[in-house]
Length: 360
Image 1 (cartoon, rainbow, N blue to C red):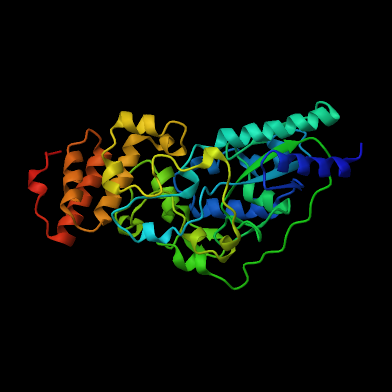
Image 2: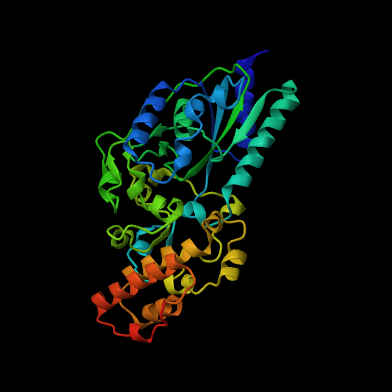
């Protein structure tokens, strides 16, 4: 079989299916394995215990999927619009939701496209051993994408591309085909440290070294319990994820807006207010966010995150009234964060309306 020709065909088919870049990576990841072990030893993964499971299967693809010889790495743009995100972040009354989560959940779409690419390969060569992934298994996505030549790891640990910045999803096909591997790109961050300097919680300890326990994406999505009090004021109005390190990155001036209908903004999540979102009932949360990545954290943590945002919001009677409406919530987690937010509102605005709140 002419594997070089097949590799060219795979890349062309991938672009036809809506991927903006397709590359092929070898499976040896010795440096990534060492760095992962060091990161886990520091405990910087926090409560993401799944990062420590599966042993070396995360860094040795053939242990996760026996017979794997190469990994086909695919990239898909997700930013529905590329408007400046800073005005929302600087407006404390509004809620900031990470761009990737404003539309439909990407997992199903990415996996379906990857399966379609596999079907095209099978139509060309017949059945072959493979398995597809999209942020759904112990896979070193960024390392494999960098190894496939589709970008390089930035100092914020995300993949960067000269022509597309970082507003994209990654997906992989582990396959038993000895395709020619692409050459990795050189890195192009140079002396720039804007992503490190802009991080609100100083989660990026040094280039390529992220302490997830301080990362706002971890705190608002992965963390199941209380958000540490010393970090709450630093979260600002970021209620689901954080984009600061991407918004400030010069390479994102080259990013392209996605034309995928599934990634279009839903429920006005690019401009909604904190008070508006905090008023959603659990039923409304489930219905509005059906098919959204946000729905996976559940209504309780959604309210927790919004309570922190309201505590950081400019003092206003409407903010206090919204918090009071949740002061007697059945969840101790919600009550705790609402209580913190009310106390913070009182200290900052000298608003004395909490006595009217229902007791916990």
